[in-house]
Amino acid sequence: MSELTADYTQAPDRTLENDRLGGIELAMEITGLAKSTIYTMASEGLIPFMKQRKKLYFSSRDLYQWIKDGKHKTLQEMEQEIQRHLSQKSVPVATPNR
Image 1: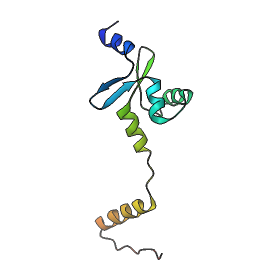
Image 2: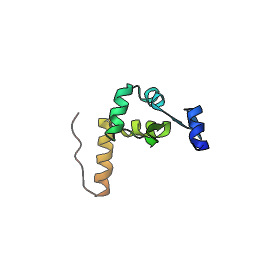
Image 3: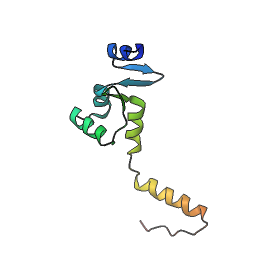
Image 4: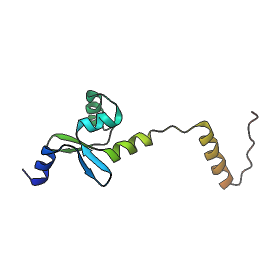
């Protein structure tokens, strides 16, 4: 067994420049999801993970980014985005009455 693998066996959660690497417990802590849900999502490719020798590893940075990527825009954010897009095309925009 390599020294790196042995090191992870001894200490499952490691810190690498503001990024924690760990097992299923880390993913459960960050996402609040059940163990079985995380395993299912990993097998379906729905959550970021790494796999070494049949063991799943998770990066806190990847998990937080994955959560942020799922953010839904507010109505105001969507309206601003539409306004920016249309102003780049030089098309006058009628604003809705409120």
